[in-house]
Image (cartoon, rainbow, N blue to C red):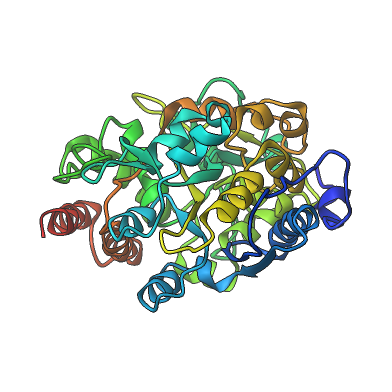
Length: 426
């Protein structure tokens, strides 16, 4: 249902609230903290509100928000120059490249010292940020997750109704065959031009890997300590080919030329797409649309599958104000901090207390918010490896060649298999 894009709390994030009480730092000097953070203007406004409340409780502390320092290349440059922010941002996919540089300070001592409620976080989103110096998923914890990024399927209820299609279940995943049939029924072409697409999809590794996982394939031998690619299996190829066929064979999804004129999310938001696979951060945009929409589980083949991504804030190992940085970090991802972000509609909270609360579940549309929590059970990370960015770029380049018609899915998959091995074994 179309509606207001942001809540009043998000629209005026600087207003004080009795619900939120930032911790005071006892016995500290007068630290100045630089906080690297991502986000659009609405998200940054919430972070600024959190920083303001923290500074109100700690009048001698100065916090500077640095949006540019959330960029991976930028943070690497700042680290090399000895000017890294005190509180650092990283995504699940680029944090391994920072972890092996000893950029992050382990948080375990802070957590134990404060009795911090780490058990409130879903374990699936804690594990990727553990590192023992050899493999990920074990050892010390180096960051606290600000969200879980689950990519369920958005669908346009009005298009489904017009096509006479029954609304999907929020509990059971439809089969690939059912979904493909729906995409064909809801694609409309007029005068040689597609005016409505049955499916809109993102084109990097993560979205298509969901299809390969669902077919029984794997990306690597062990996502937490990968040593070799497993993309050369029939199951992995089946998922990738099914994904690329939406553009190349079925022609129910927009090609690169179409999305160059209008972005993928914007095509769906304008009412020109029946289905779109992406994350929770699309909700504020879609709430401005004038049609009814909801979310459903990803279609499944031999098993249900979902992509696990997300991001963290952590403490720079070079900071001179570790205690103050910890107090800020622990407040930002506290229950109170996540409630503010949840009111904006941007994220799936990483804390159970917020994700399973009415604040999240009753924040509509979408009506079926439980889908995000249910999909978490089937979510898997891509390979946690310092050279992940190079792998992703190689795979994105090969995928583009398939969409352009210059390579078959089989040829591209072999090249991607070799590219991943080259990075893992190089």
